[in-house]
Image (tube, one colour):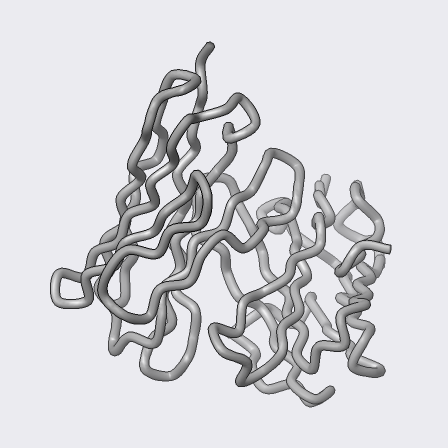
Length: 109
Length: 114
């Protein structure tokens, strides 16, 4: 079967750095997405990786290793507004999106 | 006007009721989706419409019935639901075959079935 694993919950301190990992086992690979979802709100797109390496966008970076079936989302200079759930999703060989259950990130002052 | 608008935001219904969820996208996209989000579970894809044709129906019970009258509007008709159908229902849109083809989501309808 196809599977995406990510930690259920993480806690970090304001101003610090946090890395949220995502491992996947899918039939084929056509890209990996990270979405952010604040409580009671719509998921919003953060990043897309289709080639190996690091993509940086301001305070957020996303890394992909296709050979290891592994990605991480790196959040720097954490702010209280970064408290949210972070969803990892992979497009398989049929271009179907396979979703992880999400990681709830709690930021403490 | 936000990109994808869903109404209502909250809905409480009995198991014998009939209700409809509405979604409208203002992004000019050509695909629309219904997802179910339950606590601590991955998003479950329910239905996909591409160019106004239903292209996917993931073994969803017949008590859920989608309707896509045009590329901007999507409905989910509900009848004789069960308590386990209580969840957040998310609508999304995308531009098919665009690079990355990211999804744009609405804020969802929080559904409670009593």
